[in-house]
Length: 138
Image (cartoon, rainbow, N blue to C red; front, top):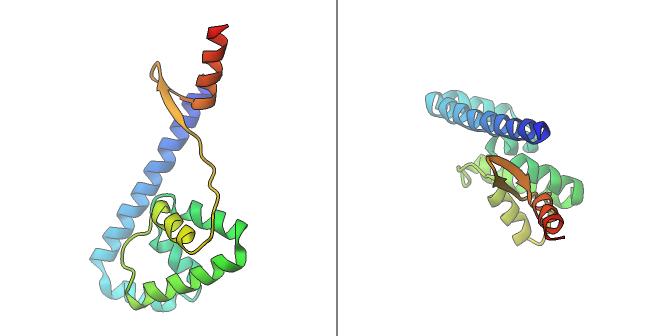
């Protein structure tokens, strides 16, 4: 039971850190538009520039895509970098948008999924819940 609590706390802390990162990146972009132009010119690695444009779970989708389709993902990163550099993409790309983009061009990126449900104030995986139901029926 403490494993579930610690996992939940870890996930909450990870989500909070991502949200704080997104907020701070938006604030710095709003405060100093001149300095962002100079930092964009200094960035030579398209992947790093794309990572700065990714939102919630975007990096997770990108790394899964790179491990499953390294050559194709490299081309996608280069093209997205061009679009970001020219200003055609200004929004934050979250994991869902990036995954949708990759799948629309034919890259069927597989993601690890886990379904948790709340039971008695705790989050329990769906497989555990279903296995407990079968134990109760017997």
